[in-house]
Length: 475
Image (cartoon, helix red, strand yellow):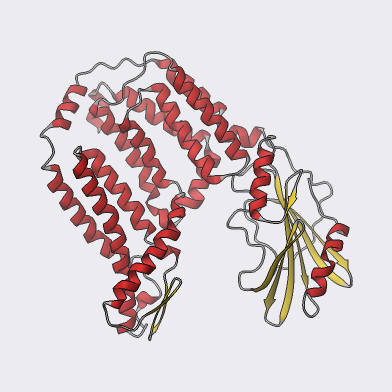
């Protein structure tokens, strides 16, 4: 690596792209923070720490192959592509649509690199490889989870152990196993896809070999997970659920997955021998003799465009403050207070109606944190230990009735923007999109709690009138 940086003629363009990527990450720190919260700091995406280093390594490989060819003039289609992506990024960030602003953030990096160097499939792959650290693969979890249930059900039929499967639960005489989302095999699927695609990128050119290798990588990852689940069920059966693995089996699957990876690479080495001899070596030798003349204004243009489109600029300069002059603070009991992460402005009151005491709350977000929204998946509007009895929508409010021991609790909530008030998360997402078209990123939550005297029917009936009479801090 050091020899490459010292002597190779492509070292300057390589350092330019690495610096551009680092600048892009720093200038979009708020978006990178969301990746840290939901990607790096999560068991499913624990491989994310390696992805930036692999990205740099892939750029080094491209440089050695001569695939990083600097442009000699301003390339307007690349500039136009960046501007289009910047507009999409602004809209997605304003509407706080996570999957959309993650996607556009990466497209901005790709467009910036396209301004500096000529487009190649290798460069597209290197930038696309960063997707493996983005926490956007959860959409596959449901499919993989139910595929695992189906596979385990059929595998258990071969064991002769009485097995009953209901939804995601696998029941044997000794106990019940739940194939939860974490047991879907998503982490093995992602790792296999990443390792497999990188092996193909570095070593294989024959299309048939590529298909064979990737098929083995993906199917093998799924089968590994199914074997892991069946093995746990069998261990539970033979130990009568007394094994320590019944309580902690996070690492158990990797002991099964590691031998599969060894087998995968062994098969990959066999496929490499079928490749045309020395093609990549000749490509690298030719690249080492090239002369690279870099057009510096392109790098400057790319950096300026990154600054103008940055999430730091959008979230710190183009954000309206929350007016807290009339914000009251009443101490809510921690037992029933909602969990609202990422720093909203919270105003609380105790109000009475019909002889019942209501604890009311307004949580107002000014949009300076991409995760700061009332529909964020980590928000909990009622204690998770409470049993939900009923849920209904009443106008712009959602009403939920809970049981905690012998007590019944009434909780009502509504989502707000400066111009709309809606009952559901789906309607709130539509409202945020509508607000984003006007450049408005503020959102909030109105919440109320009451302990019902007997059942909550009377409280539900009087709520439309009560909600109109109550005072809530709004925009």
